[in-house]
Image 1: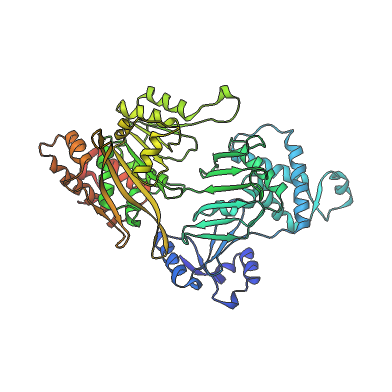
Image 2: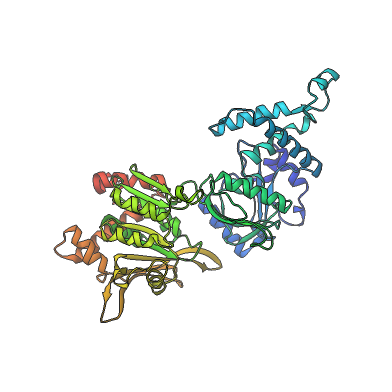
Length: 549
C-alpha cells in the first residue's frame, strides 16, 4: 500500500534523517510502499520504462535486528541501503568491541540455535560495553570494559548483531525480497538486479577494503560449509536463506579483487499458475506439462543462465501427485517439492577425499531407493550418465541444463564429459527451452519452445524431434503446434490413459487447461494455495476443487 514518505518518517527517526539529507526537492519525493504486490511491481516496471521520475520508491526491509529501508530511483539508476550511518571512529570502536566479545565467547559453552546465539551476543555485549559517564568506583570495577556513550549503545548493538547474526554490509540487500541478483567486484559499489526494474542498479553498499572483503568471504564460506582458500579459490554454495552464491577469492584470479555473485530465490517457490499469469507459459502449456508429469515423462528445462529454469522446475512440482515419493540430488539445494515423502540429498565436495560425496554418488543411491520421481538440480557432467540410467529403468527424471537449442543440447549430451550415445538421447521425452527476452523494453522470462523427442533415426542420421509449443514474440503468446500432432500425448500419454482413440487425449488437455485458467481467474496463484487445490484434485478429482470447472 502506498503512503506519503513524510507520514512514515514522523515515526521513524532513521527515515527522517535520510530524508533530511536527500535532495528530493530537485524532483518528485519518493513514494513509500508498505509492501510491493505483483501488480505494484508491474506498475513500477512500466513507470521506469516510460517515465523514470515516477519510479522513485522507498520501502521497509528491517527485521528483529533493527530498522532498515531501501530507496530505489530508476531515474538515477540507484539503489540505496538506508541504515544508521557509522563514522570511521565509531567503526574502529565497533571492531574493538567485537574483538573483546570474541575473546570472551571462546570461554562460553557452544550454542546450537539462532536464539541461543542472539542471547549470548546480548550477554557478551553487556559484559564488554559500559556507559562512558559512570562513577569512579564503577570505572575501577569495569576497568576491562569499553566505554560507550549511552546514546550510541543501540547503534553498536545493531551492528554487532548485523555482522554476526545477519549478513554484515549485505544485510539490507539480503533482507530485500525484491532482489534477484547481487554482484560484487572487489571494493567497487555492489550492483543488484531488482524484480521491478529487471536491469542493473548501482547500490551505495561497498566493502571498505580488500582485507575486509577477503575476511568476510572466508567467514561466509565457512558458514555455508564451503570454505574458500588460496588453493581452492572458487566455490559454489547455498546461503542460509537458500540463495545461491559463487565466490571467486584471491586477486590472482579476480584481478579487481575477490568477487562474488548471489542469486536470490523466493522463500516460497513461484507456482505454475503464477507463471501462467505472468506469461512465462500459457495455461495450455501448463496443462501439457501436467499430463506429461502424471504419466512420468522425462523433462528437462534448458536455457542460458538466469533464464528462470530452476524457478520453472520448482513451479511445476505440485503438478505431481502428492502421494508420490520424490528423490532430489543437488550440489546447491534449490528445488522444493511440496511432497511429504521427499528425500533431499546434497553433495559434499569439501574435506578429505574419502569423505566427499559427489552428485554421481547421490544418483547411484537414488537408483537403489526406487523413487517415483528423480529431480536433479542441474546436469553438468558425468552425473548425466546416471540420469539416463534412471530414465532407462523407468524412473522419470526432471532437471535443468545449459543449452540454447535442441542441436546444442544433443551435442553437449553426446560429447565430453557426459558421453551419452546418440541412440539413447530420446530417453528425454520433453525438452523445454526458457529464456530472458525483451518485451516492450522489459526483460521477462518466457518458455520459448517445447520440443518432443520422437526417436533416433539411422536413415535420417540423427534424432527426430517435434516442436509442440512456440513462443511468438510479436503477440507475446504461446502457440500450440502439437494439436493432433503431439507424439508424446498421442503415443505415450494416451496409451497410459487407456484411450482407444488416442486423439481423445486433447480433450483431457483442454480440461486441465480449464482448471489452470480457473485458478488464474480466482487468483489461486501462490504456491501454497495452488498445492492445496491440486491435492484435493488428486484425491477427489475435479469435484474436489474449490471452484466449478
